[in-house]
Length: 180
Length: 243
Ligand SMILES: [Zn+2]
Ligand SMILES: [Zn+2]
Image (cartoon, helix red, strand yellow):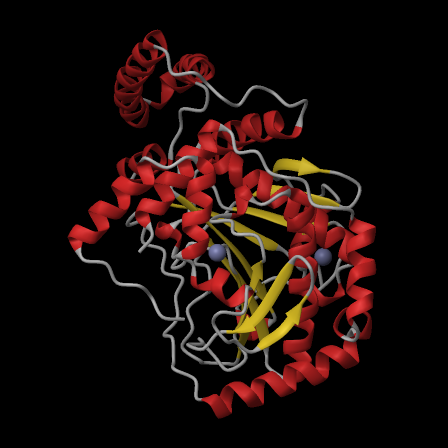
């Protein structure tokens, strides 16, 4: 079976390329939900999220964030969505992991939503236990012991203080006003 | 998580207050009024499924589906563009591991990772959050993306303006702060007027395809002057006009 995104990565088909390096690629979606939708994906064929190495995930989202800022500033959108459809039941249409970045504005007709349901204490506890057990089994390094977490932080170095520029501050104010 | 309700008056007073605040005051104010910041400091109880120095993951008490996780940076940021790069990498790596645990632990058919930046995108809280939602067939959750046919010229125009800005952001740190001088404001107005006439031009293009090349060149010229002039509204009007 031919994979659409592998074909894009190998330049076998035309694309509207935005960013490329050895590991990842970002292109303008040719059949977007909203014009300006961007897909970011690893060049290597990984079917789902969980298979993609951490290093590539980190890079994909850093690039997606920069592209999101570029969308805000170049298309004058009022918001962005970042969406991963991981697995067929979650709406995944291509067998190649990708993330979608979607520029949004008022009344653009796109509905991404769910009906919140009040969870009982029992339901929450059940989910909590199931997730916790699996977490420790799959990622003992992350979920197992406190000391490990500190090592992880050590490796990454301390986070830098963020300095907002004028534009972002303005955006913050604007977005705050829109929030309930 | 409960949503706070404001009356019209309270809302106005709230907005006024925010306008007068320094960035530091604003941040303090946000923290005090933020449900998630309260959860992070332990003032509001929650079911924590993951925690490290930089982020916290809790179960959503009003979930889309059982096992719905909210992953939060511990530092209060309203939207993704405000989060430092290192934090972003770390947050989404944590998201991946949580997604893995959900997928296996709940034996569901898939996971959606959903982020909304801004109210128009569906953001409900003032604290940046990554949603991880376990999915099953026909669960009524609407997170599928429809596909639309878009003319090639519009796609390449989008590519051009987004890429220009993106390259600036990626490259040597260019001045992003633009001082709004009187002259600048005037130029902006001119640009807006130009945009209007450009829209008209585009309409003519539709009826007169022979002149397309010529017109394209012109609009590209003004494009550079205005520094990213194509907006979603422009695109929408072109698309609607074309139908
Ligand atoms: Zn592939
Ligand atoms: Zn907060």
